[in-house]
Amino acid sequence: MISEELVMLSRVQFAVTIMYHFIFVPLTLGLCWLMVIMESVYVMTGRVIWKDMTRFWGKLFGINFALGVTTGITMEFQFGTNWAYYSHYVGDIFGAPLALEGLMAFFLESTFVGLFFFGWDRLSKVQHLMTTILLALGTNLSALWILIANGWMQNPVGSQFNWETMRMEMTSFSEIIFNPIAQAKFVHMVSAGYVTGAMFVLSISALYLLRRKNVEFAIRSFQVAAAFGLASILCVLVLGDESGYTTGEAQQTKLAAMEGMWETEPAPAGLNLIAGINEAEKKNDWEVKIPYVLGIIGTRSLDEQIPGLHDIEKRNRERIQNGIPAVVALEKLRNGDTDPATKQALESRIDDLGFGLLLKRHTTDVGAATPEMIEKAVDDSIPKIAPLFWSFRIMVGLGILMLALFAASFYYSLKGTFQNKPWLLRWALYSLPFPWIAIHVGWFLAEYGRQPWTIYGILPTHLSASNFSAANVWGSLAGFVIFYTFLLIVEMYLMIKYVKQGPGSLGTGRYVEDDKDGAAAY
Image 1 (cartoon, rainbow, N blue to C red):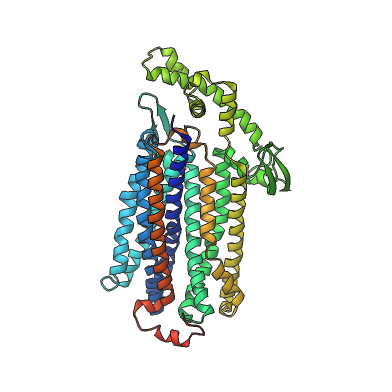
Image 2 (cartoon, one colour):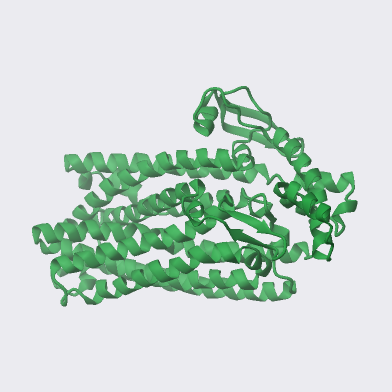
């Protein structure tokens, strides 16, 4: 068996690289559409300030894009190095969206990034605007294919297990593409990226206005960000509700865990606002509950029950016990048994095979598993509750705060008085990290909540890792942390440098006087 230390280190390494990567991705998703809006206004009005806005925010987009590409490449290699058995097991399915992401999306995106920066004096206004639109589409297509791949891991539709090759094989590409989990994750994630881009522009514009620098430039940028951000955060909240509904259908364990729901309640179930999670005794010591809300959100009905964690454990225990004969039959077939009854034994319990494989963490001979081992596997089938419960509330709480900010910013934009509201500008400035925190917490919720599965209900995480020494992972983990931290420092240095310079960094000469007139200099 692969050591627990090796599996945990492999998980930590992948988590570290993806967390670094997702510092850059959301801003890229959001800024590109803000650039489309600004350049569209420039094309329609001919006012050069809108061109300068597109170019300035585009420069920050370019810095962020370069770092996003650099940090993203590593993750695809990690599938083959740290997660070799996983790559073998799902390569026929998982490889398809990753290949499409590279062929359709990344090359499209990269090509039009170059045209965006070097085409201002070579393309007409309309041609350059089309370049910016195609750049934004390519960026979103990249997210689409990645999230289709991740959505399949959460809800493995359109596929079946082949015991002869020991691989999952695709049965329906359309089912994988239109997987409800994947579609909900895509629209929720890109909307969160739009919020990130809007918050970035809103916060930097607020900084300029507080310091009375680049005022006309900042006023227009703030107005665009406020309107775009309000629409985006509303989409995030609505689509987050849809994501919760699809999770309730496909991953009832995750839904019950993030709601701290131990017991199955009469429909419709109440929603715990906050609770004292007691994992040792598998109960809540106290809770503040809103009646009926969770049942309505989670089932879209008034009479359908949401199973609690205790009932889920009972169901998982049965599936683990049913999976034992499936694992035994699989091992016999792999060892050359040709008895049709053995194949029938596997096929009749194939849906519970993954649950039987949970026992591989505790014994090499699943057929001889003791009741104690089965109970350990049952415990493994439920993730830790408190991290999921509080992560969900942090994410939702930050979403509500951002909704209030964008609503206030949009309201005062309509009134034309936001630049005279220092409290609003400071609120916008101090809220800059909120989208990144919410997105990282959301990804933790999605990925940690899937445990103990790499592929939900099919392949346990402890069977997915490569079999090599923990020292190798320690070394590569340290290397990644050092290198990625260096890249992050470079990113922050460049972003801060050009934010301080403002649109004056474009070298047009139109913004030099703002430095002299500002109430405070950088």
